[in-house]
Each structure stands twice: as structure tokens, then as C-alpha cells.
Length: 164
Image (cartoon, rainbow, N blue to C red; front, side):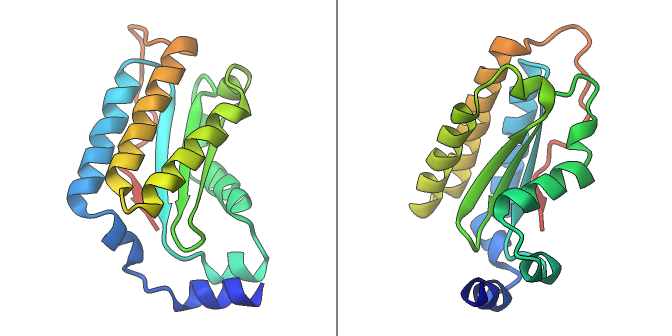
């Protein structure tokens, strides 16, 4: 725990901005908007450099942090319970995808785990933008099978990635 604490406390605040530059964030927002046009799922992207001190002291895992953000950002409040959170923890080099109950009942957890590992592999090679955009496109195709777009397809969550 001490090693992780020191690693997070020594990580500079600009780390997330270095990995995901403004043009990368714009491309990710476009990818989210495009993916949401073909299906009714709501995709929310959160990229976090270091964890907040409170999370570190509580020993919060990346999954637990993602769950807290899932609730605080309202991903669990979509009309059809079709929200998805893609959480990237840069210091821990970990990705979590959480799906609301409407999607979780249709898509196996193994699908999300495979997407997370593919993103982590791309990020380890320095391909942050491509890894994220590819994952969003794959999420869009996967959700189009279970939640195809309809005439009433509201945009309930912000498409722009959130940098913390």
C-alpha cells in the first residue's frame, strides 16, 4: 500500500494531459458521439492521473474508484439503465469498464474484460488515442446488437472525456 501511495503522490498533475492531448480528447468525443448514434447506450469516459488522497488512504481499488465515479457522474441514472463508464487509471495502468444493469444483463463481463486488456496493451505501447477510439468503436458495435438506435435516442451523458 505504501508503494502505491508514494507512486500516486509523486505523479505530476499534468500526466493525464500528456497522455491525452486536446486533439486526442476531441477525437475521443467524436468517437463517443458516433458510437452513440448507432445504438442507445450512453458511454462516459473518465481518465484519471493519480488517485485522490482520500481514495489512496482508504485503499480503494481501481474498480472501487470506477464504481464511485459511476454513481457520482450519474452513469447509473440513464433512462434505460444503459450507461457505460470507461475508467482509465494512468498511474496504476489499469482500465475498468462498468455497465449499468440494462447492459450488464445482455453483455457478458468477459466482453468488458477483453476490451480493458486490449486498451491496456495499446496504452502500454503509447497508443492512447487509438486504443481508446478502437475500444469505443467496439463498444458501439457490441451495444448496437442489444440496444439498436431508435427514433428516440437521447444523449443523456456528456460525450467529452473527463480528465481528473
